[in-house]
Amino acid sequence: MNRYFKSAYLFGVLGGVLGIISFLTLSFFDEDPTTLNLIFGYVIVPISIYLALRYFKDYSNHGYISFAEGMSVGFVAYMIIAIISFIGIYLILSFDSSLFELIKSSKIDTLVTSKETIISQVGDNSYEATLESVKGMEISDVALNDAIWKIVPGLFLLLLFQLF
Image (cartoon, rainbow, N blue to C red; front, side):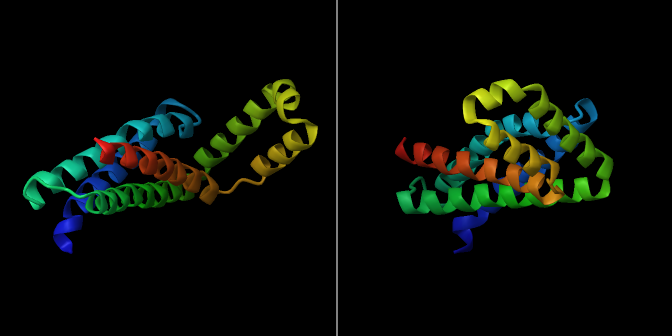
């Protein structure tokens, strides 16, 4: 069983560490690194999944990969990326609470600035609920959001990779 997941662990850890490095680096350049880090995640997750599948196929399974093997390897890869990214971002924001406050205020400012547009699209009640939700945001919410946005694209991209 270990041979099935060696490539997933390897490239999952690599992707997760790159996600943390991305968040740290972007936090020096932008007061809200979460948005750009999501975009970086859309690049690193597919690359990590592809490399994990390719490594498994070429070096662990003699040039063959079944759909089930590919789904298992890919699932483990993107879940490891998400877990490592979650833990890393949570720890960074726990140690640097000023960064968390900057992220929170940036998201509140974005909502306030776009108030009329948002209200016209979803209504006043939804806008107020969203604003209250963002005001009550915690560190785990930021880290969990990043992790979820590594899992969701990972699932769909993995299915696409399996078709080809």
